[in-house]
Length: 391
Image (cartoon, rainbow, N blue to C red; front, side, top):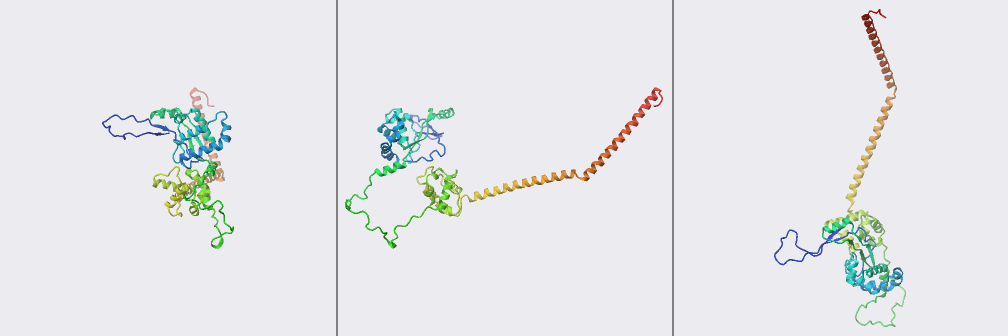
């Protein structure tokens, strides 16, 4: 969550000035942060909100409502006027450049359009089924933790509104292009008449050498491979997946020729952000932005992540050497233990055991004789004291 404040007030630490009392500032609102990659695969509108409202939505309704919407809605049909009214209201809350981050509540849309909340819900379902809007986050009630955090900043809301993206459709865009008239290049009268022939009389190529138009070169294979790996890399920015592999191949051809890897491109983006302060989350032309980064970097032979990768390789080699030394030390200790055990079972050890056993037996015999003599002496002394004859 992040706090979104409306309006502005005195800066922190400024003393209040004399004069009439100003109206209280509106309470700050809490905006639910979206997860990373939530916009992946969701397009944008091409001609801003006015084109989306005036052309995209009406033509989509006329072409697809009977086939794609009416069977799904069943008894909950919605009129064309209601759909256009809700679309106009939603376009006013969407991000100007992309049509994303559209998150008004149904009650707000109902108040803006004069329709009921249920009609707004049916119009939203129609927009989604027509393929011109996507609900990327469904509205829900706030959790207890979120509600307490909201109350701490004065936001008394108890739920999150749905987040929508208003966008065009590829098939619908082709239909709009086919239905749109082609404007004349000049206001003067066209000198060609309906009976004029617009085709050449000869089908043979003309021009120097009569070779005709040259064949366009295919996309660079090395750049395409680098682009495919970069688009699949988890560390790549989300806008790297906006364009196809063939679209990226041209700008990445020089980098691929010098052995760049996806980590080099990610490091280049990080270096650009560190020097220039930021990188747009949704650049207008992602290919142009990366081309500017490559031009700013300079020599493609100098890879941005080469030093980090070399340092990590050295650290990995040192770690593997330490592990190998530990295994070698373990093997040497095992050999020493085996040699000690083998020495315990040798002939010299057995002879020493026999000598020690004989010495122990002799010592035990001497102790036995000493004890027996002492016992005899005590018995003789006792018998003499009692006046008995010696045994």
